[in-house]
Length: 119
Image 1 (cartoon, helix red, strand yellow):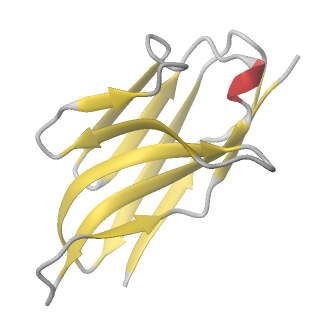
Image 2 (image 1 turned 135 degrees about the vertical axis):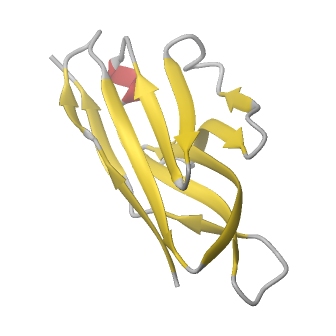
């Protein structure tokens, strides 16, 4: 059993900051990559940022220079600065995890956390 638990969402004014956290737990052998996606009702889920086990990161153009992804152990963070109303969405954590007694990596998702940017 693997779980991804997110925290840190909320309501913030434009120009403000939030830090999201996502902790992976369970029968984990290794994590190849972790990342954040976001989704607005009626639209497709879109990539925000990813980080691999070796450290390379990738960002959506819309968040470059404002968001920073990092990780420590089995936890991934998303520092969001200079937030804009268009950043309002449900943010989902994802991780490529290999479990005990398996040889392949599978994708797991968190339950999502709401981020609302509004004055």
